Image (cartoon, rainbow, N blue to C red; front, side, top):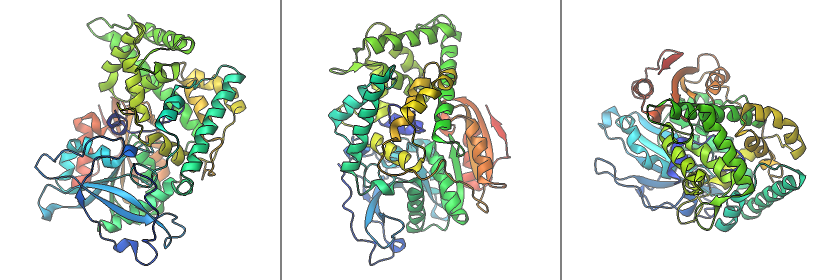
Length: 514
């Protein structure tokens, strides 16, 4: 979700927690030994690196225990498994229940791609306390992310400028400017991360997870994937169907879509979320401070964005709130109903000429902390997506597609359509039109879709179930708002997920939670 021109399928937890490592010195640890036999040296966790978002070391666990961190060596190039290695950063909280009841490790990926699991898991670990009774909770920085051979592109100052540019060009001159700036960013990634760029595809991360399964001592991979993590989980199931244990996919990426179809689906999804926000605000007993009707709320937002294109307002000094930053901030606030109050406040202030709140929301989306430092979320996000996605779209093609995107979302349509050019000049060819997640013979995988999800629209859950294959995917529907279902705290959803992960009892197919 980091790229300002593409609303990525980032998990809510990843984007919320984001309110120096170098290439991990590719070594030769894989040349002489079997990487599956390596022993992890678990220690107290350090403070997050700048690439992970900075901050303090994770707080102690509620029972007085500590989060533990380690580094797993994996092949830089999986086609040369005995060649150079990179370090994959891991974090865990050991199971809190009796050893006799322990099932194994439960591996989390919270989305992005580009989100640091090492920082996200402890930030939201309390939400998974019930699962910790029988599992070691484990997460990781996927290759290219955080401490795991991070992709590096531009400096913090350059990224400030990058995120201020006009992401919705209105004429040929603005199109050229957008393409030139995107080309500059992509060239910086190639220059600064040439060695890792060809090796950050989702298939590479899936192979890392199977190595992780073996190093952790598990016969099966028990897995909880959120947002992009559902795509990673589906790819893992395709590559290693016999190694799938109890797995849950929440906030599901549609694996059948091309990047264009995914962007168009997100345009519809974010427009639906905006409609729901406006309806909620104007339906309450107290007066909605940003409009008296649903349509007025949306009209005022549209007018604000049009005004910001002509004349930005003060944001966080010395930066100004541009149309691009405001659109990004609005999108961030639609990831959770819990954020709607911040959107209301941010809009109220922006109408009075103060852009601080919307800019804070935009910064959160982009991985910028209050010190002006960026995590490598944008760099990793772009690198992984552009390595995975084969299509390369031109400005002329986007121009022809604008009417359909605008019909899908008057507010987000242009924003998402122009985001399709972000991979046009990428140094590494894309792998495929869409991922292959067919997994005949895999254990049942619980697939959870949210009807109000803006970033991974609900229809993707059914498409994932169908693509996994007969007898594998089990669909669960949550009639709610925001990105994802389990972290909504809905009892029905949590009971269904916990029942499967803890007791091996999947819910009936097509169960609906409201």
